[in-house]
Amino acid sequence: MTAPATALDAARRRRDLVAAAEETCDVLVVGGGITGVGAALDAASRGLRVTLIEAEDLAFGTSRFSSKLVHGGLRYLATGDVATANESALERHLLMTAIAPHLIRPLPQLLPFAPGVTIRQRSAGAVGMALGDALRLHARTPRRVLPPPRLVGASEAARLFPALHRRGLRGGVLGFDGQLVDDAALVVAVARTAAGLGARILTRVRAGRLHADGATAEDALTGERLELRARAVVNATGVWAGTLDDGIRVRPSRGTHIVLDAAALGHPTAALTIPREGSISRYVFALPQRHGRVIVGLTDEEAPGAIPRVAAPTDAEIDALLETLNRLLAQPLNRNHVRGAFAGLRPLVDNGAVSSADVSRRHLVRASTGGFVSVLGGKLTTYRRMAEDAVDLALRHRGIAAPASRTATLRLVDDMAVRWSAPGRATAPPELSRAEVEFAVRREGALTADDVLERRSRLGLVASDAERARPAVARIVAETLADLR
View 1 (cartoon, helix red, strand yellow):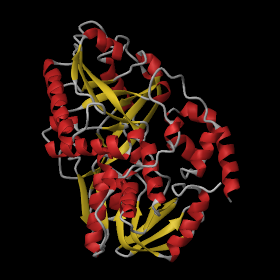
View 2: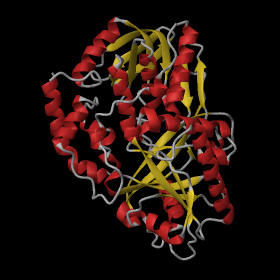
View 3: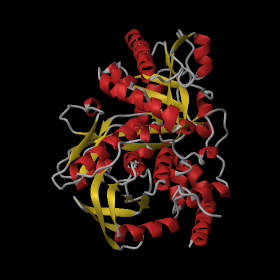
View 4: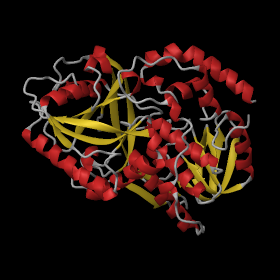
């Protein structure tokens, strides 16, 4: 059976790699996270010839380690950054109504009125949700997509999040935001949509040096050196952007989450919003996930020094998340309840702020002295706007004529949606079926068992789940790759 145009597999990679080395593309994108694949889709949807190279796998870096929220910017309202909040609300609207409604669901979020939440924090949270709803209205997101916030009584609050301590509970305010079924799945969907429009999506190809007319690169699978020619180049490598553009100062901030069993929290059906002690703008969230899991996060810690291949949570961060969560629980949890932990590095633009928590989440798009364009900062929710701005500048800078962006109404490929189920009283993750592993290899560009476990199925969020499934997954991946040769 002929593979669809959106399919990414090892055979297509080999063909596209040869073509990329022989031809001159219009736009070369470096980086296969959400911003990079977004830029590739934006350029391809304008009818341009596009090549994307990624040193590892799709969503290998920061993009797979988010809170999996498509949020309207409540935090930014709390700090007075109305522009960022408004941009977030508008992009959330586009994602939930036109671009990826099959990958996002409305998530109820409870801010409890409990002894661990001060009157000031309750008031600020309620006002913030009301202002956030005003942004929802301004973005024209209908109530059927995102209901407005409302007050709830103590019994409903306890039903939504059963692990809450009942003593002193006075109800709360319930708001709604968007939740991705999975952040890595969004990256893969954007990449496949770009591929369907002709973009070459080349993983395991590492950029060495960027210049105005292309890049030197290396095929990580063979060691072959490549000279890739392009009319315009976009550096979308996130926290690694400064290694390719010495005019950028990246200030990485580590965001850590822990993974818990939903059963330990009474199988909540709403997320819990917990203000950090003494703050009205910083929160910890307990977010229900698929397969009976809850992730709790996130931190905002300075991460100076060399950029690691994969960031690691610290013991202090894990303990701090548990401590914040336990302020509101009837039965405190301990380290034995933590099934897994993960961390990502935010690629913040250094603006000289004292704390990384005070660094703006606005994105930066700039033309480098080397003639290429770099884009970084921002957040997952606004990836589409970041990509549009980066491609616009790259085309202007290089004098390339092209139509305007059309990604605001371009729906992402949705043949992968059957894999995902909404959070609920699910059992622990089952091992993957053969069909799911084959789909990851034949359609989603997976080349290794790690690609499947860590970035297609996400079993890797709990190491014991991944190791239990690894032998069978590795065997099926090898058999499928052999069939593609």
